[in-house]
Length: 267
Image 1: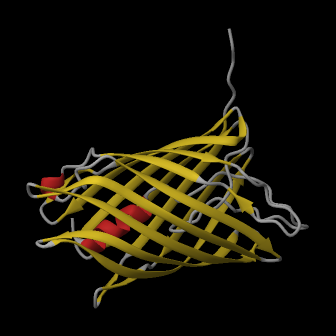
Image 2: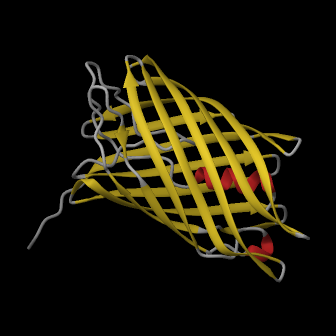
């Protein structure tokens, strides 16, 4: 997988979070639909979310689907993310992630929301064709979120660990930290302007072993949506630009989310 597309693929992994009303005089009507920066809100009881994301970079593209479910209430949430990629002449499933998030802190006066996540990476993508990394692994993220007036601020710090990443016949252990932040402005109740940023320090395999590759992504975009009864539909678009190892890559990102209630009936 090319370095640029590999980074963008990990951006498509679970970065959207569930709905929760923040403690503010005028809560945002859209709060759980960021693209690259994870928000610190779990799904409310009785609400689940379907999230689709698609990215085009030159002739390569990737698509992701994430589904999020609360476990009983808002404190615990599980989700999964599956990928489909086209890299050069190859296309197929990418690596899969199963995610757990804990609502450690709810947003309040002078206090941000905090919802740490741990994810298991399953090597379902074909590493020989550049569709995966060939290793099971773990990803950790520490997201914080805070509203101030018509602005929402989000901060992330995390790490992806792949103990046996594969290239050709070689296996290497890779540990890649990342840091992210975003500012979201409420232009109208159901229209938000977004500026997201991501700094990565990826460990990559080279002929001599491994090295550290640094990258910076800036992504301006917007999101809008509609409330339909108890359901909410959100669409969005962004133009992420990546600066990495002297290379500049710009892509186009499209987003769609459908959030709806569910009820468990017992016999």
